[in-house]
Length: 272
Ligand SMILES: [Zn+2]
Image (cartoon, rainbow, N blue to C red; front, side, top):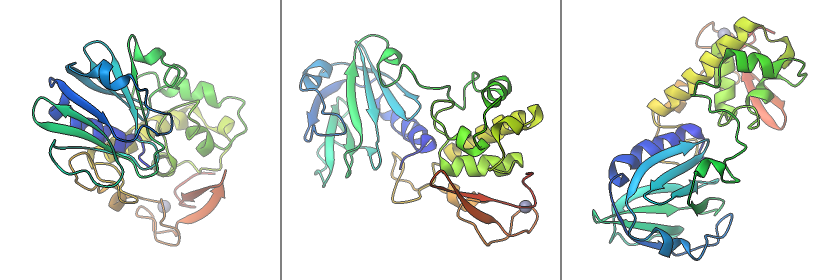
């Protein structure tokens, strides 16, 4: 599943090839995505220039002169920039043919992705309007994390992964950030100290930034927009390392299950 770092990597990958280009044609070969692609979309975006390539949570926001394309990669989606005459392969559902001769091509085997076109402020669209703060933006900070953990009995890891509190902190990133902050994942959120909240904010940001820098995690067959695989996986400290030695202290990494998701931690480095 493409996580926030993969989506950000995709955004950075496509940005130089699409911004400033005009959409010559759009082809929707398969409109039956998570939500059907509106029939009028092709006509409404044709001829518009792409003015920006942004992101909110795991949505890519492709800004046009008169509106915005809101694209979600779903469970298995990917975007590639390639010559427009490149033959389609299975699950290539959408092409935006640009005036450069390139196409932005959306492939999605499981079709949980989506594409919408909106005019006006895209952040007021129903998919985006109620999203929690971005982990890499200023509104996710120590005060905020401190406030949302008060009186919460839920384990800190589950709170970090709650998309209503902060977006885009998937299982891998929550595990790694908790290791980095030296906080045991099963700790009750309300028991986190202010210093630990500060450490967690720094850890979440550092973990996501590192993943973005190395191009996402490539847990399955995901490749970045330029086709390059990610290398974040080689840098993991705890995720899927149960029974192996902690890179920091040598203790054996442990695994348990929280909310149907696997949790990994170092019993020595992470305070309970
Ligand atoms: Zn350790």
